[in-house]
Length: 326
Image (cartoon, rainbow, N blue to C red; front, side):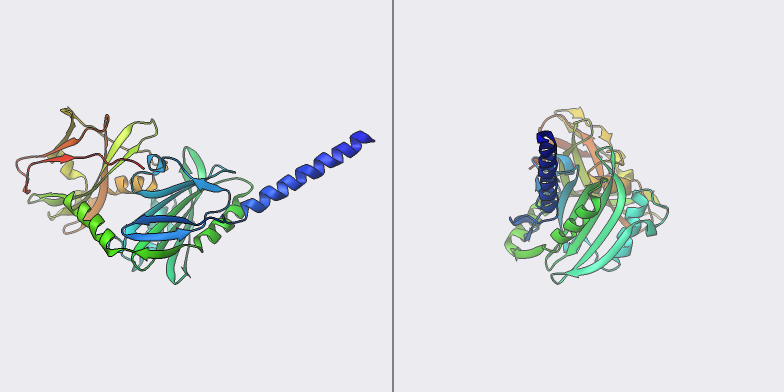
């Protein structure tokens, strides 16, 4: 009889633990998280079981301003802030839906769930699709929120498990708390000026290229990489590949030539994968395409970026400092 009572007590105790765990998974954190970028500060509440991720830029790249992970599941979050002048809001919803469908192997854009809504006076574009994160099939919930001074993007990788639907609901509730809380034009201009001073531009009769940013990250084998982000404009009558200019420059580190590489399509660094695919696109006359090239590096020594003599530019050699990760 005592054993029977003990079994009932244990079962009852375990059921209470399950209920407590279930409740915490469906609540928002009492703490408010703030992130900043492009002179704009945002606040939001994470789901209660989520915590800030250490060294998140090593996972998502230096463009990420925040990263988090769920302590109860194999789920992750990357947050990026982009200047509004870098994104055209008109037709953003369907244009992005088509791009996500193509990048994730869907036959057409209808396979990607899309809804546009308004939250706290801001337009919000939400997408849900299947993708791969850290080698595992997962759901992705991608939100772009256009606020007064910038665009903040949340990319949630949600595990395919029995708690998926509850997790989606609490993620949506978390997004409803996102607010732009402050804006500093001084910080925005300082950040823009810093980016402008780092720009490298050169041209030929065939194309114009502008180097618009550098980032540091690691690949799936823990190899350090530098990401060279660029804009390419085709000046020829026939189509050209956006990365066709790479033959006209050389990159070395400590006198050692750097070699290009690529992240696998299932990499967790979704933005880099998108840009490296865009770098291989064919571009028509007068069209501009943004892309990225990845190079393997060894250590933090600066990179010598040297242009061919045939290129038109303010100077022929540049020293690039590798950005430090968070």
